[in-house]
Length: 295
Length: 295
Image (cartoon, rainbow over all chains, first blue to last red; front, side, top):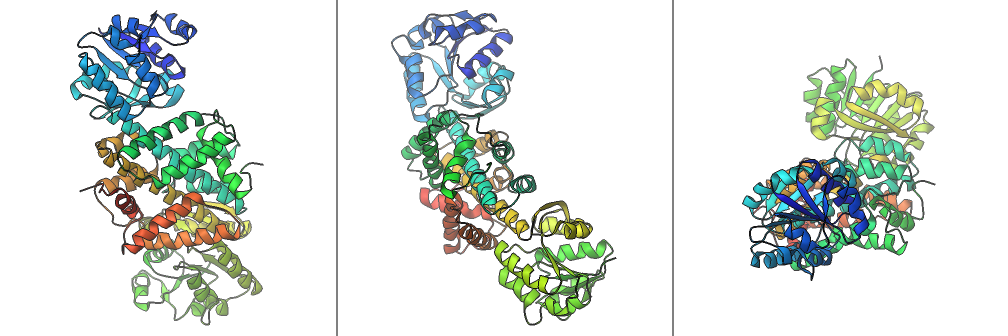
């Protein structure tokens, strides 16, 4: 059985690494804030002193950290995993970062004989804890097949998209859809409020048909209760919008709808709402319309 | 049992009036193009020579025509139903028109002692034929309850929203959601194509989660086959966008996302695509990105 290294024990990584331990793997973990390793070590994982030490004790290294520079640091930095890498190792980065940065990192790992998969996830902390994440995978198909049992210990829907970086492109597509759908929901509900109708009755009437979406049912429902708490935090969504913009720029891909979404989320930043959920983009529409969805 | 009049035997009205005949009602029909009455008369309806004559022979008059001026013509015009109206009659307008025009028409009918419901529908020709429409109803709640069995002969999900015009507001909300969600789907899929990934794999990977919507599954799926045929025609959607803009203007309600949708649908008009389905808004994004989703 392959020995697994796990780098990054944030809200997502904690649940994911525990699920690997539970599946019977020998897991060596590392986290920048050392105290966060304790709960995972208590379930049977070993703690390492650096990403390099993780790599020395593992055949497969999983990472899930915040942004492209963090992935570069833990994999390629001075104490990075690459310095403990052995030919034939596989690194699976499950962070949501730029597809372009992903391909650059993979090229550097390849020089050491290390294969890389990009495998960003959706499904949030609940999905991470319950092992029900959706995982979108890029990289060599043979390497993907070899790693599939490991991914299945952490997720429920595992989809192979294509070559290295393509998992990140898929995640970017996911985030374009999430944001554009959410903005439409916010705008539609505030329109209904401003028109003086019973917004809850409207929400119920339109949710089941051609207007329906996960965002309308879930985040729309939260908005009707005045609930702006995260699900998914605005600060993380703004990071993802940056990745989308960078990817689109490299492809000369105009994004009229997503750009509008991006601008309106900056309003949330200006209002200091970075730790609220993405549904709180409604405040931008409420401000424009000089009304509140819930008084 | 109430005698029903039915004005407007287009693609929607034909199936809807047939379902009223099937439910056992005595139905008197009128249509501007007289030949379209024949298929409904053959199932047992009577043909009238004018909306006025429809009204003279009915207790409840249902209308479903194209736009606000058409509703005004058939209800209030020189040969309009109002001239055959009797105190206590009920007029149910199932067209998709402006909530403002609806309230004006209702006020004129009220002067004659005629009650009005606005009851626009969604679910398309298939829903009209099968009696599975969603119907969003505005007007007096007592009148709604009285008419519910008639609406149930034509639809499956009947939702009372509020006072007169509120059904139309609900339909406008539905159309805001349909268009904003569809634009996001088009933009996300073209982004994926431009980034060089397997768009079908991406579509499959993201459809089941927080990015999911009826539009993504259905119209997104059509786009991946290069299918721009209607479902719902762009010319009708552009009419609805006009209603939305008029309603929003009256309420000082800015619509950043829906306005963008509106502008991009004008591109479809400029390209002579008025009879294509709403998913064909993808051509605006394809043009901007200088690519085609399906070669």
